[in-house]
Image (cartoon, rainbow, N blue to C red; front, side, top):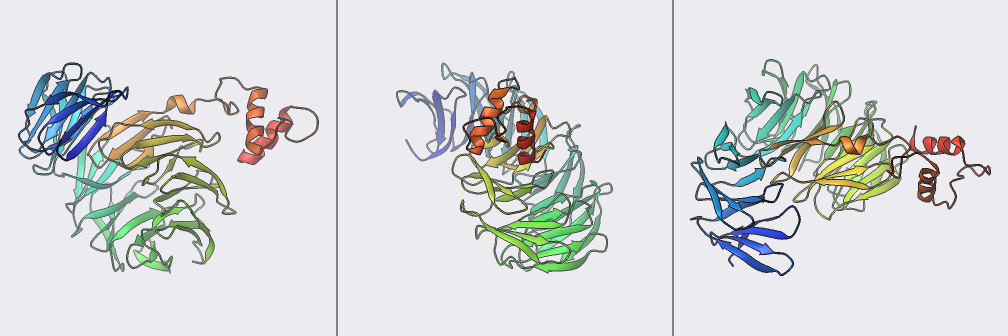
Length: 463
């Protein structure tokens, strides 16, 4: 077996498919660690492989410009998909398995295929690799930046491109919508930040001053201030979004900044490559607090909707911090590796975070339990947003796919049903007591287990 380029597990975990430089596709039995089938036909490197959600078929893509659909049970070739006019880089199945998405560096297209017939449904042209993205506050519009300098505005509901924003002279590295959705901010390798009118697609103002790429931007809750973080110059600028003037400069003295405003707009938080999280007073520019994250470099930061909790991602998972005291509340564990920026549901009960190579993790904030790992993208998710109904999560990936996830089963739990058994009773208090380090659900020590103990719990979690 030559160098392996791509691997994927079947949904039941019993089979592995691999593709590599020797132009073959291998189907492996996990229990016996033996090769079941050696599948030939591709005439160049196999760049990507993927199983359908039901495990009945799998697909392989190649630099020979083709995609092949195979039957998992027999290894029989079902169809060869010919439309790309360049090597195919990535493929991924839709959650229902009815659609296969493919992307190509060479022909700069994303193509959608019917898996039943092998017919092409749609071609999306213009970009070949997504670099960064941001959802509008109402989740109807997504801004997409890529290695070409342009930015797309895309209607998520109608699946139509609304506008193409041009002006940056190098790749776009950061995007953010204003809270009212009327302004889009973009940062770039060209060392500038640009503010765009979303309705017209026109450039409002160019903000200059960074001496290196701008890798993080964030709007204050009222939209009047924009924070932008550079990389090598180790500075954060606060801009007046109405006038386009710089109002202050913060010096975190670290690289790889991630930024977030508190919900009341009074505090700006920055996490960096030196493992420290810094809190600044927005009005005075003074540093209020600094905390050390022993999990490694900070990949992303986000406040809970009530502003009482800060989530930070690092190499081990998500750390939850008391935003007032800086004390770490808990750790939501995932696999070791790099994570993206976390996001809270509107009620603050669920936090999600993407991890490179391992999907999107969904945790319950109160019980600290991992609800699920969402898998479907062929590459890491670059932006996450909860739909306004709070039951759906939207994710966009480097592979060019946009997926909508139903999280309703995780968000319909009764407020006090902390052990997830569908009933609110003494067992829930017992569960909470164990979290307090107590053996008895009589948390206030008055000799009676009643609503007063629930009140104590409510105070503890900020209800």
